[in-house]
Image (cartoon, rainbow over the protein chains, first blue to last red):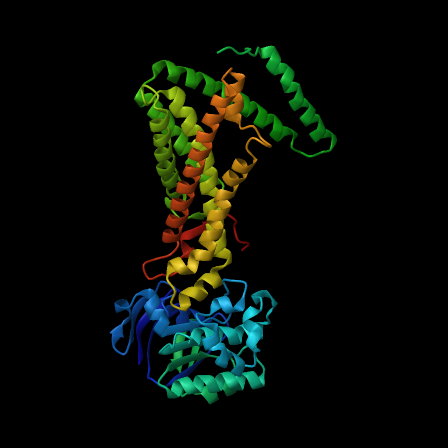
Length: 198
Length: 269
């Protein structure tokens, strides 16, 4: 269970929120309204104030890296730090089944990052995030660059993690996707988070 | 030792070359004529002053005055490191980080040099100041290249660093590709000049000693010592400044803190 209480930073008014295991909440709102700032604050990637805890264990009792292994943030524009795709995975062969499920060929580990499309990188970044088996997934428009078929596969994979007890916050601009994935729906507007119907 | 003393007429004759440069600048409208003139005058005045200062210091041969001159050189080089950065650390760090690491590296290496050469007394300014000057000059270059590449790398590849942080890697792992690049760039000039030494370029100090009548083999020994000292100073300075830079631009929670930089280029409003 992810508990957020009075979380604030520049660009956000204090936010309190509890998301249960196996629960997915959708988050929408105009660009620049603070959705990514909110997710980054939960993952402790930017300075922020307030209490965040995982299964009643406060964030401060984890080191930064250990917290982010459990509470994983997937950026809308994920970064790459090496030339070859496989350098970005702890064990590429271990991740390969999931990569192939997402429609990429087995030899894509040898590809150069610069030669891949936005959609390919988005799928690979999702696999990369899932290799730590995080308890909480903070997904920032994970299917923005994907077609219908690939979007379905990503949604199915996340559903499987939800069944296993994962907690998910899913940022999307697509109302249909929010309906399919989210049990509750939230909207961000100028740094204010409100719960409501779609 | 005997050498031919230069007269002011000799210098005036050589200065005709500068006039040649200036006329090229005017002919091709390079627009550097004024800059060239100012640079020439500056080097003239600064070097003449330096000559007088060194002469005084040599006669005094006092540890305090030598130390004071050394401090002045370090502080000025620190300012130079800061001036070369496009993005600076906010607050006192802008000046402090480069200056402190350079002070540490150059004082340590000069100490090694003085122990090796063992002049009597150890603070004999004829040895201490030129050695410190050469070491500072190169260490300063190493540090400003290292810091520049670290800061530019972290700013440009913010997404790549944060991708690793978001996957639960430590700040050291996440910044390693950029640290590596910064250190390689910092070491490149001294590696290049060591490779070319003797083949392409005759280093200035060696040339000076030979002109002053020293045995070339002796001069070479001095030059080799100096190269090693410079390499040591650059390594120590670049490593300590780049690692302190990483510490300053990350925090306890292993976040990237680009917000601790200020850019000199103003954003259009």
